[in-house]
Image (cartoon, rainbow, N blue to C red; front, side):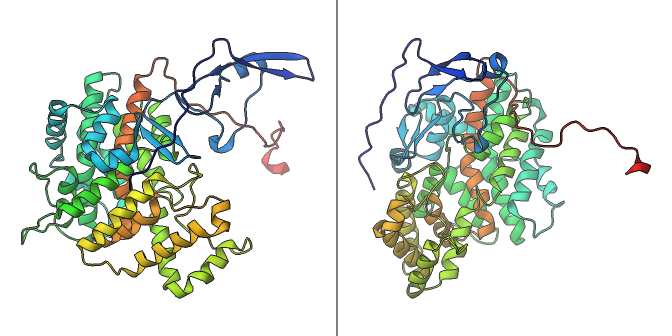
Amino acid sequence: MARELPELEIVEPVDGEKVTVIFHGTGKQVDLPVLSPTHGPKVIDVQRLYQDTGYFTFDPGYMSTASCDSTVTYIDGGRGVLLHRGYAIEELATNAGFIEVCYLLLYGDLPDAEQLREFEDVITHHTMVHDQLPQFFKGFRRDAHPMAVMVGTVGALSAFYHEDTDVTDPHGRMVATHRIIAKLPTIAAMAYKYSIGQPFIYPRNDLDYAANFLHMCFAVPCEPYVVSPVLARAMNRFLVLHADHEQNASTATVRIAGSSQANPYACMAAGIACLWGPAHGGANEAVLSMLMEIGSRDRIPEFIKRAKDKNDPFRLMGFGHRVYKNYDPRAAILRESCHEVLEELDKKGEPLFELALELERIAREDDYFIERKLFPNVDFYSGITLRAMGFPTAMFPALFALGRSVGWVAQWKEMIEAPGQRIGRPRQRYTGHPVRPYVPLDQR
């Protein structure tokens, strides 16, 4: 699983570097400062462009626009690099527990033994939810999607813990971040239990974060349930691999919601709502549906042919990524976890996993996929792993939200504490009607 990480260039700032924009129609010109990051492309600062020239920039999807400064996560999609606070995701997923990664994302450095013990203790003793919250679930239909339940209950935390919704209070912010990290697994497990008609299982302080979550999901009151260390390790890796991913759609949603000084629980609910979109958090479910549609190895050539046909709407799900133009560094780790889980559960011959392996082999050898850099991404193996562990597909985005919650909190915290923080206000290019007079109703 270990791989040699590529050398990353450290960009040295150049004093006075600038870009000059010349408007040939008027002869006017404006100098725009150039900002240097630690890694990655330099950034043209256009903050004064409208004020100085009357022009906006146009960038749908924000593919060429940096919306903020951040020290949390760095991605080099061309090289397949993902760093959290400078640490490679491969090393974190292999060696660190999820709580250790939470501390890293929140506070910028890996904790020492005493800091980790204290942080684990704080999170462990915040996992219980308010005793009225379980009653809240009864307002949902039993067949409600877990993400609908998550949006509602996480947003409702502000009604139960309103004492720490003042985002200008540093202590309140700290307590809120701890509560979000601690209570999300309890709420996600309750959403799962409610959907299958089983009683809620309360958290246990003697279990670590991942094992405690699995216990709350799969234990029942009538018999003891022992969490498999293999499954707990796989869940820990899943959470670490999904902890943060720079300025993706849900993180950007959390940041722009938070820029209005909305309370942190409302911001987390906004992130969950965005993640629920199938283009963001539903990809691993789409991978499973695709594998089920293919059905057997002998049908793979038929679907590969369809994937190459530009006139066929069929697409191979779980291949390629909006950011990564190389192998997703998280995919290889999940592939190994998938092997371990299937072996532990005596499902080594799982047909969908065998199909996934064969599809990956073809994609890594076929010129069509190589030229287009269509390699397996993190969603390719996560759905198979979660399904083997016993989770229904409707729970997949809720599990994604559980892992990503710490990234949302860390990014929200960074934004709120940034000097000169302002409310987000994207601009637009208006293409509607010009000014027109109002026509009285009897003349239309």
